[in-house]
Image 1 (cartoon, rainbow, N blue to C red):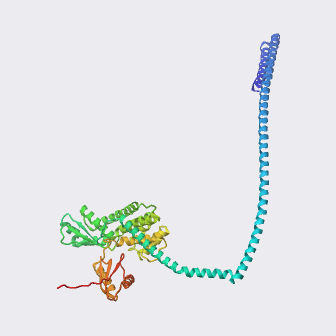
Image 2: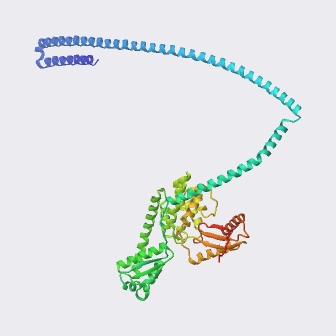
Image 3: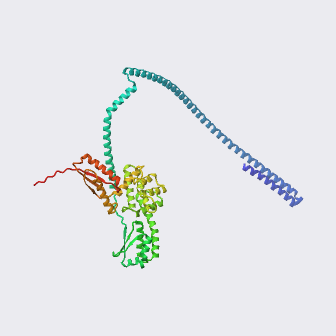
Length: 517
């Protein structure tokens, strides 16, 4: 098509060029060149006719070529349509066969369904007949035995119950005894294994810290002119500074380990710096306080990493670090919480409970002690509020609330945390008590034991962890000795407060003595 258009355009251009040539000849040469112009015009016409014939031939050839290609494409399309039609016919035949098979299957299923319905109807009729026959037989049997079915059933049950009641009671008693022995054995093994697998050094937190001095002249500088420096130190840090005749040493006294640690670092920094005056003391104290907050957070993070726990609020991490500077009966609160967490995790592993959740409950059970000196309330209530504030798991909150028995534990992990807390606090050397309270507790234990009839002597042993009661054999028999042990145990639980557990042992023995002379 493009070739045909080009030929027409060439023809037109040729005619236009010839016309221009003729006009040019007429104009330039004038009338005298008429013959020459006619000759040129004739030649131009011949040339135009030639181009026209060539263009027409080219058009015919192009048309023939296009027609051939079109016929070829039509033929190919017809072949493709025929092939598609054959495939559709084949598929239609296949579908017809499948439809016929399905129809046959439906007919078979319908026939089977009809057969089953008929069979079911026959079975129901037979069952009705059998029920009627059984009813008639039962009526005949009841008439012969002069007993109804319900009366016979009740009589048989009553006879079996009377015969088996004694055997059942004996079996229950035996199984209960076996279960108690098995539970006690497993519980002891569980606790012993957990305690053996976790061991920790026995440490004691004192209420005083000693600072070494480079020389005795430093004591005078710490006291300052008219005691200004020592008064500023005590006022700013909140501790008592004891400067006596001890060579090259001073003592810091405070029941708050956190405050005492800040005061110790402040004084050591002042000694190294050498500039000791009220303004410098306050500057060093402020800097140490800032550094201690960072140290507290670091301690909290180290504790969490050591226990393998995650997802703690940064403020809660800071509170965990503060436990390192709190004590209970001389026991470091953070160390105690870590012990409880480790033991809780070990017990939870033995019982198949969530180990991480048990560790978390053990670590946070005393979290209220981190700020119990700042706000009112017991450390249990404060700990519950803290756990709720930082959206801890309800099982952790339950463990905090119930670890001292203030509320009943609602989960196994809460009971585990309570057991681990008791184990950590009760181990020898874990906690210190004042000598006065210690002696008072021992006297009270012996007084309770001596208050029962038939008791000859009572001895409090193992720092009050065991009470041995010697009874008079002529007044107390073996069975009564067990009752005395239980009565003493209940009396101790009602009237005394004590860490850990107390073992009561009642001893009854008869001695025959003779002297050979």
